[in-house]
Amino acid sequence: MKIVLNGHDHAAAAGATVATLLDQLGLGGRKVAVEVNQEVVPRSRHGEHVLAEGDRVEIIHAIGGG
Image (cartoon, rainbow, N blue to C red):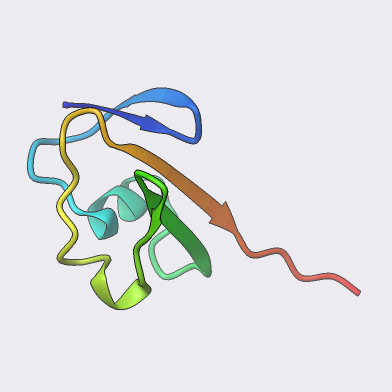
């Protein structure tokens, strides 16, 4: 299925969850914030939030500095 990931078309497997998408992108276990269709998906729900055709997903990486 097609989703929009950070403004770009992206192919994702049917039934993919936020967690499987993060794993596919090599971001599993990293500190990221995820929005699907402009709603924040809490980390505790990444494994159960199933993506749908056309979803708009934004992934924001936490960057430390000082």
